[in-house]
Image (tube, rainbow, N blue to C red; front, top):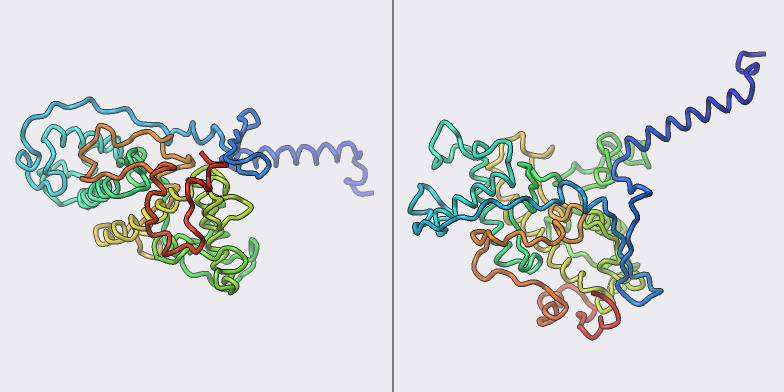
Length: 382
């Protein structure tokens, strides 16, 4: 008999159980973002009982350090002179009071580069007016972008955004994406996916291809026809269906919710059975696309090579960049309050059940079903 055959069965069973326990412990340690058993998942009902209009949330995302609202900088006293008059080479915020400008600069330092301080954008060996650092040129464009969003986006409404909404104390927001190389022919591996996904992906989010982001959060490809057939009756291309599904899963992950936060699972495409949140998301997709296309990609020449992606493109944003797993970034905190210098004229107003339906807006050019009305949502929704 071999040594293995001589060993008692109880001993072999113990070895296997020990190995299984070790493997389980290793799996739990290495796999992040678990909802602990003592952290109950909360369910919120949006519609009539029995139709599965629920949103599930967890304390995990709400207690994430990146979802904590930063402390405010001490208020300023106006100096009575504009920043453009007090300082040199002020190209974006020259209309602010000089003290208000100083207050905003100190705040931006805490929002984006708390460890590096002013030296993140300004060369300590040169004048603050010098434009010799690429980070200063990028920050200048970012300030223009933030003012544009606060003035014109109906997605953020009166809450507004600041640099912290995305950066959360980091020079580069934690959640961003680059273009990916076109897939090569299947070479085996995990579910037949070719490299680089099955070699570089550390999370399911990384495993997903970037085509959905490129198609819908950068280019103008319409998100429609995700049902079995399109409006014209033609079968939607399978690749488009997959990309739309992946985009929706990425949005759900970014907002920390599920499909029913915006849609009715009985009729995903029907706007009259959707929640008002779907309208807010509609604006959010277009705002994200505008950020990527009108600002970030146009700053390509400002970035050094080590700040670009593997295909030489700039980092871009998706819904999770701002939301970071919460349906409302930072719990809906009024980020722009107290920082009026980041608000341009004609700031956008909040979208509510009433205001969202006051005008038809551009939906009619994209969706084929009638735009929803308040009456159609009286039976459910917030």
